[in-house]
Amino acid sequence: MNRQGVPTVHLVWSVQEEFNLRGAVVAAQTLKPDAAIQFDLMLATDTPDMADRDEMAVGSGPGTSLYSFHGRGTLNGVTPHPALVSLIEDTAEAEGMQLQRFAQVGVPTDLSSVQMVGEDAASIDLGFPMRHSHSALEVCDRRDLKSLSRLLVAALDRIGPDLKLERG
Image (cartoon, rainbow, N blue to C red; front, side, top):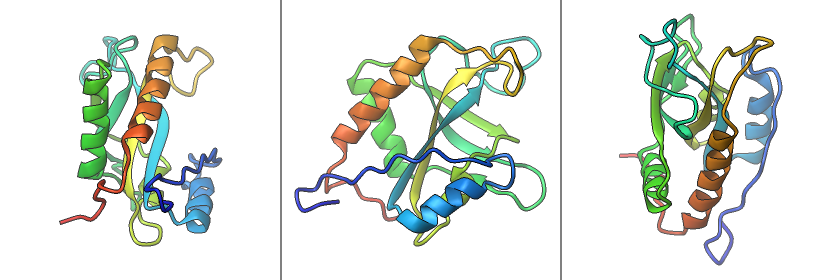
């Protein structure tokens, strides 16, 4: 944060997530963030073939992950920082926005590795529900994307020097 208590924000677009999360790790090693907010799709589960995995619906607003884990090998997942969970939930409520919650195994993101760079960056995953990931027929609702961007801007506006990122 600068002297006025305003956080410095870096936007990073990364590559090679599907190949051991390489792109985001290089950025995190360079930037050494205090906190990291990851944006990605969140698997919509509002179709019969996905209904047993979670409750994430296209058209019902952005989502935040409360837990993610790869589930195979040594790849890890993300348990979001409690202060960032509160920030996102409080922001959504103050803005009158729907916020879906997501917890799945088998859905790692770049944040899985970013959170362990440096002195453990406080982390949280945010996203938009999407059907048919990695296919030619990916589907999402533009309103979910707009709400996600509104949520991010409003949450960043609420970050001040009183946001405690220590654990314990």
